Image (cartoon, rainbow, N blue to C red; front, side, top):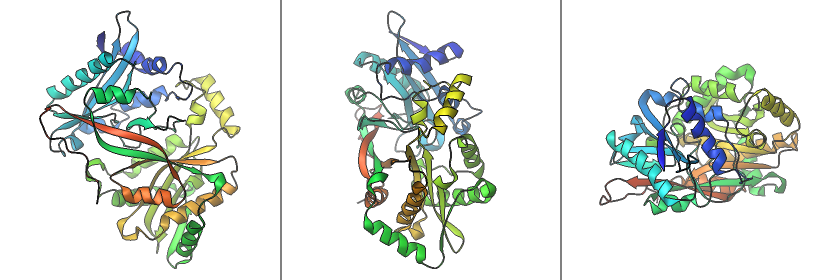
Length: 387
């Protein structure tokens, strides 16, 4: 086996092609867009490079066949917030071979050690936690856009190297065709009728105001998760929405207000993976034509619930139920939608888990974020779960 550092266009192509080889016979897997993967490692496109560093490798066997890949990175804003300096690994793909996996893990560990790290988390993203984060260990069905999918044997590769569970996450599924509990409607009606509350969906006409309000809520609602929280700027949100404009629908993004102050947000996207499944990671002219054709044929019947957040003062008021009821009204005019997948909720956020279950969604997938301490005699501490 031989390790090759990604340093030019040829090795970058090898990095991208590794996944296509690993999942060649897996009809469930959806190839991410090559440009989306490349953007993670591009300092011009990923702001995490301003406070971090990254490296990538591919593994070939004795016949020069691609056998695996891995990336290692350090987010200095996060790394030193733990008891020990902790980097990350991600974009891991590997054949079902423990020696091959160990070679990849050893390579990442060595690189991180040289830069002062004492542990590594993985598989995680060099960027926002809503993308490429965690290892799928249960529910090997269709992956939604930017959500991890991997072979079942990956769990054994991690655990046999002595990675341990740092925290678990769940993905939830809501079958729109089955309706939602009657109590959700009662709670929503009570909230909507209360003086001062209003619910508005995004429009491009009022994009600037909406984006500023969205950023205000996000940065207040997530501030308590200090280790994984990085404030969102309006500019970042605007760029993200602009990128998603070909598929985004205005009624998929909502803000709740109380006396015109933004207090809660809900963000959902049509699940683009239902189209990307037919493109094999490419977005050339032919693929773009196919994309538009599939889009017009209502190929996307599933939505991905990306985030729901309420600032602390208004939590427990039933605002989440009001969001869901408003969305059901939207779906009445879009009958091709049949399901929503909410991804993901960590076990250290039991309040959000309770909310998803209360509106009728069910746990459908399980993920693990692992941690590996380089000093094998050091005490392992799991991410704390609230009592």
